[in-house]
Length: 266
Image (tube, rainbow, N blue to C red; front, side, top):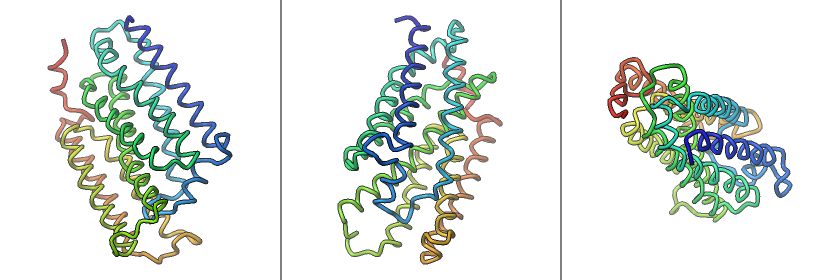
């Protein structure tokens, strides 16, 4: 399969993913949207509904990125990138589609395994990204960085929802204690992933997610301030994620990705 064909196949799978996501969002799969299913298994770390609007930003950037790869497929560095990310990208699309279906049918355990595979393949893609010299590669860095970061928090929430479905007693610890532990563990996990990937965009989506958790704890009719420690911890960590993004950006030489990655190009 030549590079151009690979790029078009990637686009086709992405568009199919968008269709399935849209069907899921409007409740055409098993009669419930992802939000309605999520509401069946409430957790203290689920962001407020408005936070999920980031999907629109991520998918728009991914669309631009894939169009860029189709248009520039003859350029050596873009062709190399297409060759390197096509397999993990297709796996991520299949995992995305299967996650929508299994989550919609409340098969939360299976959906948890799928979202774990999903986030790993996105990390693999981020490791393959080229130095962001030029607008197209900058879009790639931001698109896949935000995507990977958002899936980290989505994985954490999915695992928490599965534990709710299992009616896990948390070894006797209170729900708010576990929520705080999970927020901190997610911060540490993201720090490790960021140390490996050094994509400044990655923690920006996490900052947005944690801000959404804070908003959910401030909203009337939600937790209504019952767990102030969780809300304020989420807000503090959200600021930390922004600071981490800024630090990585400066460390990369005012770049979303390390510029030395360009030395690896053929």
